[in-house]
Length: 321
Image 1 (cartoon, rainbow, N blue to C red):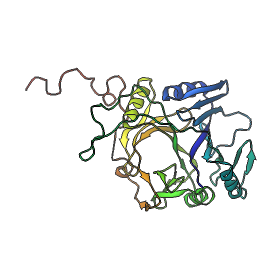
Image 2: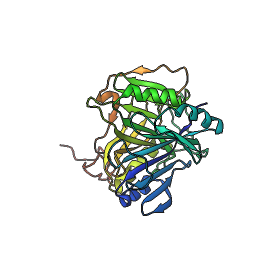
Image 3: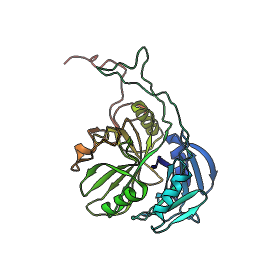
Image 4: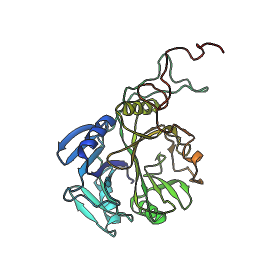
């Protein structure tokens, strides 16, 4: 019995129009719209909601808007709901209504659980040819003109009390620690078997509660690049990327979001089992990113931002000195 992953997230924001265009460019499908609320879905039905900050009944944020107001985790069935209901009843803000149960976590975030609405997908994804495994034969790797995110893969929060918040997710929702920055950060996955992390909690030297980023899973590394280039062409600002995280092995690209903090495309994260032993790392630039492009890649020139545009010549086709 374990949580399956993120089923739905809700942002609180003021600039609904800007958020509307951002998530359309990001590759989500807008399925419902009012002047104060936007409902998007990813390919597998994971929901992303943007609600105006003044919306009645919107859970309180852990920081000023724009930010993430609520995270809904999916489970397999009604028996799972009953199990987590018993675990959540002792926590502040306990609610049980409309097929959901939930409470408030120690940093003030609204946490909910429901029977998952996401659908199972079979998607064509890029195959990699290594020296030992030649899986792609008579077939080029794909190139994407934009991304179509599969789901919200993980969320990352700044927290004031790392150990207390981490223990909540382990004790109440059954999460498992994948890796640690001792005293500074915990990577947690929903179940013993799964991707490297569904939740990352980070405590800064000057501790505060807040959103760091929301990460969207795409098919493969090529879709990370295609999606990032499309967002660049649309005029959205890169925070960092593309790049590679050595801890989870994932390829990433982060953008500044009008709905709060950052959003990330990522692919190719590590898959872990119950035999995995958590590692400990000291925070530092080379631990966060094996490599990364600051400012991103220009969607038109396909070069690092502000670099000279390509001429169409071969790289050695230039006059000798």
